[in-house]
Length: 461
Figure: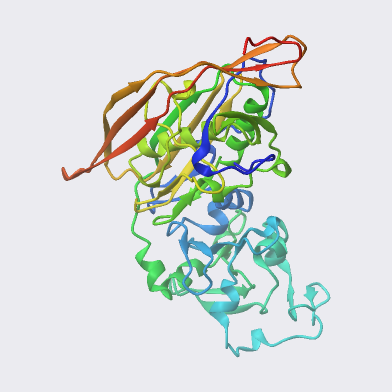
């Protein structure tokens, strides 16, 4: 969290507070994985997220064919790419958002150096019935022009880089009238005249794939995506500001992809400042009442932590709260606080494929839910505990003046809780019978009753 008042030591951060107020109607992020994934058993690969959106908006199977790999890293460019039969998709964060998903220049790559007359640059169209593109020195006409115009045009296929000519298709050995574009090869199939398939795209994705041994190794089928971990926590009776911040943060953690071997950092993922829509809320800092920006983040980090833990993923950084928080008392020692700088929640995707994080905040039910989807490698998770010891009762109540409260108003912000040591053991078991256990160690300090009061209140102190 980024504090709007004074900076305090990370170790002083404790739990966020609760106060019964009517919930704010903040727009929610609804996670529907069925809208995000599409699995193709024909090749054993999946499309998801923006790749799926682009695929389905620009012709789907007819234009691109089946996926041949998952999303992988291109060793030359460093961009994430996914191979299809007729194209290669690129994820380009360096381009404007509308071009985040684009097609590789497969036509240019595969025809580089060709000196066929059809590739000679023209200064004008020799046929007034054909459209001329001075940007690339070539023309389009007839069935190819209609296909280009109705199936995506410049944005999908790019400019023509040859004229029409006859070429042997390397896939079936037959001759076809073809024309190359920056991102595609059009083929005319006269046997399909009268159907939507008289013009088809060449298998340029397959041809590119053959040039990349790393991509070829990624063609092995993968399991269908599955739910591998989930968790829900409640935040009933939270103050209005906290409800707002929880909903805002949940939106920011919805529909995230984490690649195999990648370490995910909660704090590095988003900006939790006022500029990002967060507001001030109460927190206890060093035993005193403070207002902080983005109060409520620990509800989100704790829920994500539980979902990741339930998925059996490798947790590399987790910090417990300093005090027992009523929202997480259903399982003591199973929470994760965050504080910027100093306290983060991190995990590594140690599965063989990408994982996807979905998050939803339901204001009416006052719940946050995280779901982790990925390739189920058969690992299972069990827990032992929590085991508690060394209970310590809280001391006298703490009273804090709040000039923003009404005269005579008293708000019981924190109901005191005892301190305690907690051990909670997680065991991950793989299909071959091997297992690994880790213990979540937590020390909760005793937490006194905490009251905020307005003008004119006699606290008796």
